[in-house]
Image (tube, rainbow, N blue to C red; front, side, top):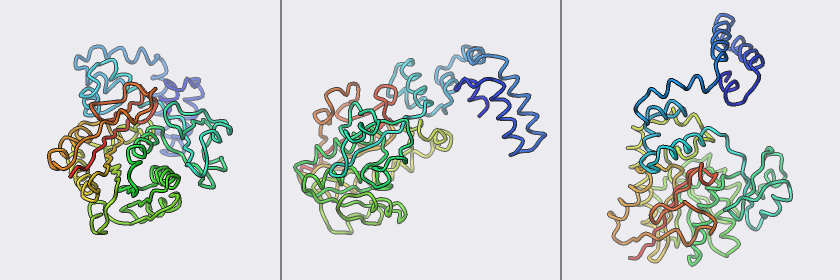
Length: 357
């Protein structure tokens, strides 16, 4: 914390050292507080740029960027697989270290984007429902009364694009609905357009949160992989699947160290099974959306291609016609891939399919 204050927050040296040493004294005792004091004084003797100079001697660019931007090498490598250019990878990694400004979302039928703007928010450039606000979202009456919520613009776009693609369908299902952000927005859009809405969530606790925010509709509790047990078909299904979360590291920076590359195998299997389940309960002619908050190829393009091979009865829908006209650099093939450094959102991925037989 002290080093972060010195180099990233430009807190005066004496204040950063004093506050950190006092915290160390309370948490770990006097002896270790003295060590913290000595360490911070040594660190503060140089600028960040001076400390970073030795990085130039690291020949491996992935290793160099991993140290410079405090990311494990497997994540840096994954970004290279997608962005290719070293300079852009650096921008993407740097963006993960800048805290996100809270973004609010107006739930149609309960509030509007203009109301959020009137309360001091700044309209989001891409989502027609959002407004960014540096103030504490919980202080707003619209949030407390559940007329609006807190949701990244990227997640809003996932819901918005799904709703547009599903307009011709009368019954919508959110397969992995907890904790309820997308379900709240999608259910509100559904209610405004006379669609039926069902949310499914495996966790009782999270299902309860979903129930508190959905506009209209049912909330089921159960494993999304067993959704067919309800013996019901839907015109449109969205599967926002569990993932590594490496597209939202600016919100949860600790995830980069908690997640391991070895996690991908288990997550990929789960993601594929959930997508299979979504396809299985979609009516012929219906729409399936697959979303993750990770740009990793194993969780995005690989899943899309694998699903197309497993299910000859589906075809991919080009997402481009459903994206805002001013949203540039957000497509990857026929899918949507957002980036924090390009769009100011979490790095959300979205692919659309149609069940043709």
